[in-house]
Image (cartoon, rainbow, N blue to C red; front, side, top):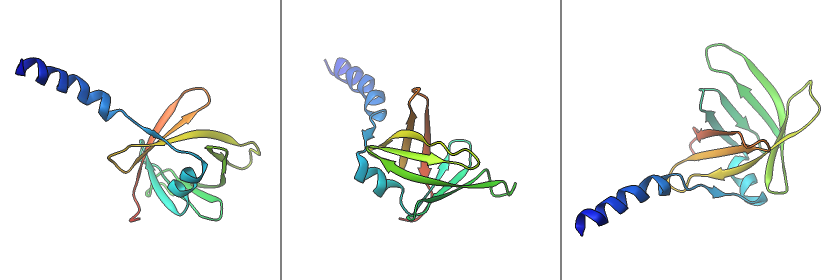
Length: 118
């Protein structure tokens, strides 16, 4: 019986680890305003409270871009000149780690981790 209980606990652990908490509009704003995140590939993004955002490919290359961000409904939206259109994402956070997951309308996902000291 203990072996069966242990097996069930081990099988349940990965599912629990993949639980993400969806954020509503005010929570999206709070999660990003005046925060800095690191993307999976190592790029950094700073979300200023005034709606500006700075994307830096990495510290060594010096490649960076300024854009805008806003919250529309329950999604975060970004725009990067010279493109004038906005691209929006649903935002979720990991319940037990300083990570965020962005999901595009096409279902593609990318994860980021907070690197600031908030």
